[in-house]
Image (cartoon, rainbow, N blue to C red; front, side):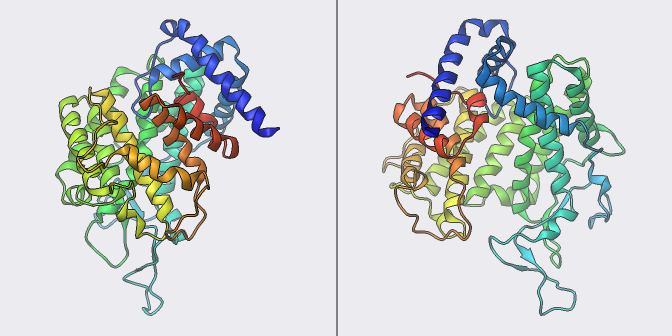
Length: 407
């Protein structure tokens, strides 16, 4: 019964989105990079028209946004210690899988325990950045759907505090991201924490037109991300992360491509996105669709999915600059599609995963990949995979950001 109810709701959303197409021109489509703004514009039209399915999802967003209204000022300067530079404006976080060495009096240098999170991470800048990014996303979404300026005002305050105000802004670098006590050199792997900032970029797009978000605010944040992009491209830390053969290198490309587009550097973005995507397909995906660089991890199914999601993001960024990367295929059959097909039976739990996975995998996270593949390839079989996964692992935001499209 629950399965049939979920299916009925999903069909209702598909039909509703189709019906809303006629009103799409009346709703301003936001400029987004993580999804298609025209889909969200249709959702807003449905929300305003009182569609019950969309209203239920948006109400959950509003509930989160109401909580975010009470967020304190979040800034890198609030941490209790100064990073090695002595400048609290430099972001600093602890590498997740590194722990004190019990054989050393001070525990340094820390030692690696792959897949096991050190709770000391909460004392650094990652948690505040996550709260800021998610807060901006939910507040901006609530503003976009309701046009209530209180949400835009709070999102703007969070953005100005983290990125713009001289006394609280973060320096546009990640030199001390995921540092390890006892080691002095910047760690390339820390750059992956910047993935959280995609919520900020799309949040800025949703604030367009708000009385609480000025053209100077907008230009200032875009300038910050342009400088951050330059740091990632030119620093030793950034170049080393770009060379990583696994998901770190893929997510680096997603970040730099997104920041370049957001900052208005379109041609640079186009070249980087195309080169990175093709190189990653060639080197990371086997002809059968498996990912050997991720198979060696203690969370190998999780990292297969995580790297594949980054490739999906790159292909979607390619759409924005006139590139068809979804259909790119090597002579021996390596492609994003073979990587998706390889994982489907495992995420549908039709086959047991043979790699190491020390914690249960989040099967619902594959919904986004299946839905985006269904839309990109106009393939009903992928749509059915997404539907089956949603019946067991509901992902309501998927229907707003990546609504099912009729073949």
